[in-house]
Image 1: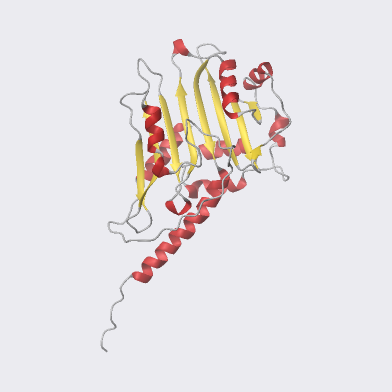
Image 2 (image 1 turned 120 degrees about the horizontal axis):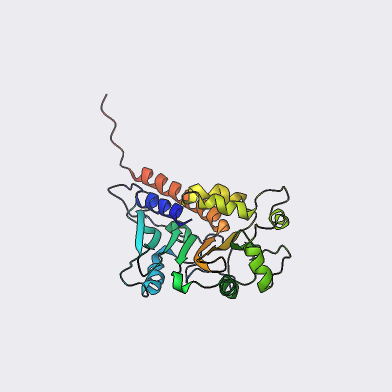
Length: 288
């Protein structure tokens, strides 16, 4: 999952920008979001409400426990202007003899749409002598995010719509949650997550988005097709024994914000380009 995020990071980092720029008054608009108020899920303090310009302290606070690991920042300029903004931030700790490896990625929209995070991913590994049990991990995840929409295929799914976590009328006990985690997702639950036309399951949209570059233009089509406004998923991978956990992968996607920010940004980039053209000096007509 994180590998595709890295592809997106370097794609964003390598965006070509003009050698010169000009002053431009960006009037930010706050994009719509799947999350608001108390319903603002986060991954170690990063949420879709986090601005790229303010993400560094969150990364640095977390990385204080990983000496020598520094956050990397990708930036680009807004259109043809001199306004530089954060497009992505990540860190990667490769596996070592003393640490199983860890990584995190956050991707942000432009300043026109308030430079908000719309995709966040984290991978957390556990040493063989410190692997928690699956029941322990399920309990920790539930304590942080609440009761999940669904469990299956090794994942706990939280789908958000209309300001609340979607329900498929599936309640879990500790025992049934563990059983569901180790089994394929219930087909009836998958069908219940589709729209009225039988499409748009966020289970499918999650997998499609994870395979794409994480720029707004690459994700907006899938975001529009999703039958939810946003999601948080936690994938729990088995460890040295089937009941232990070797690695956990967290993903937060704000589909509603992707659609809204994509439109705001596209309009703003077009307006900036048009204004730049209008400010270009015109030559004098030659004598005939």
